[in-house]
Every structure is written in structure tokens, then in C-alpha cells.
Image 1 (cartoon, rainbow, N blue to C red):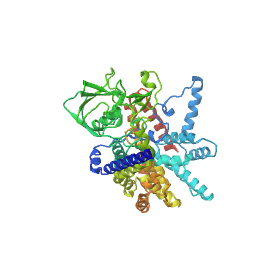
Image 2 (tube, helix red, strand yellow; image 1 turned 45 degrees about the horizontal axis):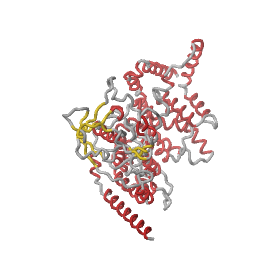
Image 3 (tube, rainbow, N blue to C red; image 1 turned 90 degrees about the horizontal axis):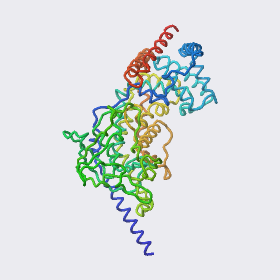
Image 4 (cartoon, one colour; image 1 turned 90 degrees about the vertical axis):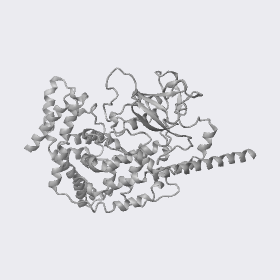
Length: 571
């Protein structure tokens, strides 16, 4: 009985201490966050990269449209003749309509094959946006008529047809101008706010669980004692300039290097920022003089076959210490600038994955690694995990810090005055059909840009940021529905988090569709012609890119475009 009372008192004290800590964290000044979000440049992707990100499996390395087929000489003439005839057919709206409707029949193609076909067809029509629109228009008319006869009420809820995928592809390719001139800034600031707020608190380098998050499944449900440090970073031995970088003493060395790069290369596209693996971090004032810091070395803590990733606390780094971020010595020049804007780098570097199997890194590569959580048999860790739900307040705290940025983004996306001409024409067109399209407008047109900012921006999307953005995507889509937003004690935390916000967003959305100004066909054709002219930008990109210059992609693409325009004028 005495042991039970002692255990109860211990747990009460732990809960009391945790509650005080959470309350203190909730007083974080929003101005500290805003000061970290000052930006002078939004790193938009060019139009070519933007389009390639929209469509699955469409990249320069593997895109079959950009590579010569392996054809034997005896078949080359016949196949070339057949392809020329196919090119002629692909410029005929009725042929395209029949082709799409045939392939859309049940059991003709798998979902993946439909997605791939839609992407290939969309890319082939980018130089003729008017034909693209006319195809989408006639397909939608037939689809709506069919659904009306079948009394279907969820026409746009699922993206399981080629017709619907083509519609979304046409809408999104026409959004680029609007995104760059208006809505893109709000989307970018929302992404940066989520990343900044999460990384101001501990993030586990292996699981991507974090103290600040709105995703319960990624919540760090334990107390992590930590301090904020400011490091004075000297880039590559350039002692003339030092960059003050805020880090946490519980950060791994890879996390510190990422935060250093984020500060030093602020407002630079991700494709111009060096990889972690290309950099080394050197402490100039270590206990033994200069010391190169690593995630794993011979000083790492080891226990029962487990190895702990090194942190600044492990090295006993103090506030205001001077460090040098050095490029690792490699003979090849210009290796540090990434050649592609399409990469995604997680919070972990390649040498600190959760379970590493291999023989390159010695015996340590075969050991299981951990970062923030204590050892599995740690008594304190087990006690805290028993009342982990007390840390759910962290979800609410993070949501409060994000509220201004969420509101600003949602208001920007439903600003009818900034809508592009194709979007306005499309909404008016569907309004004439009398269909319930509001959920589709949110889910299909804008939601992907909320959840996947790397479609539009040259940025990396860390694993701890993506789940939060996906929740915000769900909130945005749900704000367009009219169904009652019911919650109870069993509802998931993210549903409870935004329970009072969704009705507020719905009030903003209600007048949005009423305010959409109509567009005549002449305005639409002029805008589509301008979008089609992005072909020159794509050709210029191909000519500038080292990996595609020798393959003459630009020349081949120009030939195809000239051929298409010649056929269009004849038909």
C-alpha cells in the first residue's frame, strides 16, 4: 500500500510539472514566429517544373514522350507513318472524345493507368489549351447528362474517371499565373509558418514526431527538456560574416545543419541549397580545440545494441558558440548546387535512418538508433507514456499559433476578385448545369496546393510538416460542404481542433460563388492563348538544362508544336 501511494504521488507530481511546462509554452509570443517568417522572395517553380509536379510519373528522366523509342530499322518507316496519322487524330476533338469515353468504360483501365493516360494526354495538349478546354467541356456535358439520368448526387466527389482527371489537369495548368501573382504568397507563408512553428520545438529525427503539431499521430507525447541556443555560423571559413542561427540543444547534427542552411540560404530555392551530406559542421571552441560534429561517432551513447544520435547537448555546446559550416572536399566543381528542383529531403539524413542494414558504415550501421525518446526500458519514459494524453493540449497550442496564417490563406483562396479567367468561366459553366460543384472546386483545384507546396514552390517538404498540411487540406475541403459538422467525445482530435472554425469558414465561402464575375468566350480564348504560349518557356528550359541539351528535346518539341499548329489551322 505504501508503494502504491508513493507511485501515485510521483505520477501526480509528473502531471503537475508537465502541465506547468505546457502552460508556459502556450505563452510563446507570436511576434517571435512572425520575425522568423520575413521573406523577400517566394521560390516559385518554373512552369515546366510546375506542370511535371502536377502529373504523376512525368519527369525528364523517365518520361516516354521525351525519349526515342527502341525501334528496329525494318519497322521504323511503318511506325513513323502510323505515329503521324495518330498525331493528326489527336488534333480532332471528336476522336479525342471517343477515345476518352471508350477508355473510361468499366474494366478498361486500372486507376493507375487512367491517371497515367490523363497525364500524357494533358501534356500533349498543353500547346493547344483551346482544344484542351473544348475536349473537357464536351466530356463534362455528356458526363453530367448521364449522371442526371442516373440521379447521381456525387458526380465530382471521386476522381475515378479520365474525364474528371482531365478537368482537374486543365484547371490546374491554368492556375499558374494566378498563383504567382496572388494566391501563391499565402500558400507559401502557410507552409513556412507550419514548418517554423514545428521546428521551434523538439522534433524526433527518426520518427518525425514533434512537440508542436496539429496531427495527433505525429505528436511527441513526452516531456523533452531542451534549451534554445543561438550559434554563430561561419560559412566555409569566411570569417568576415557570421550568421546567427537559432537551434535547440536536443537537435541532431543533421537537424542543426538544415537549420543553418535555412538561415544562410534564406529565400533561396531548395535546388540551390546544398545537401546535408555535402556539408560538415565544425565546432571551433570544442573541449579539445576544433571538433567536427557528426550524428554518429565514437563518442555516441550505446546501450544494449542501441545507439543514440548525437545532439548539441551531447557535445556540451553552449549558447553563442562559434561554428563553421564547411563544404566537404570533393574534386568535382559545382557539386554543391543541386541540379533538380524536384528533390524532397526529410528531416533525417541518409546515415541516420531508423533501422540501417548494410556493411558500409561498420558495426554501427547494424544497430537500431534512437533520438528523443528514452531507452525502451527507461522507467521515466514508461511512466510518461502512460498519461501521454495530457500532451494533447500541444495540438491546440500549435493550432492557435497557426490561426492567422490559416485564415489568411483560406481568405486568399476564396477571393473571387483574384480568380483566373479559366476558373471563372468554368465555375459559371457548371453553374448553368445546375450541379453541386462546390466541394469539387475545393477538393480538386486548391486542396493539392495546400497539402503539397512542393508542386508550386522549389522547397523541400519535411516529414514532420506534411501531416499538418494534410489536415489543413481536409479542413479547407470540409468548409465547402453543407453537411453538419458533428463532433463528440470519440471524435479524432483534429476534428475537435477545428470544430468552431469550420462554420466560420463556411460563412466566408457562402458569398464566394455569388460574386464570381461572368466571363465571355473571347476573354477565355485570349487567356488560353496566353497560357499556350508557355510552350516557349518550356523550350527555353530544355535548352538551358545540361542533362537535356544534348538530347535536343527543345528541337523535337518545337517540331511537334509546329505540326500541331499546322493541323489546327487546316481543320
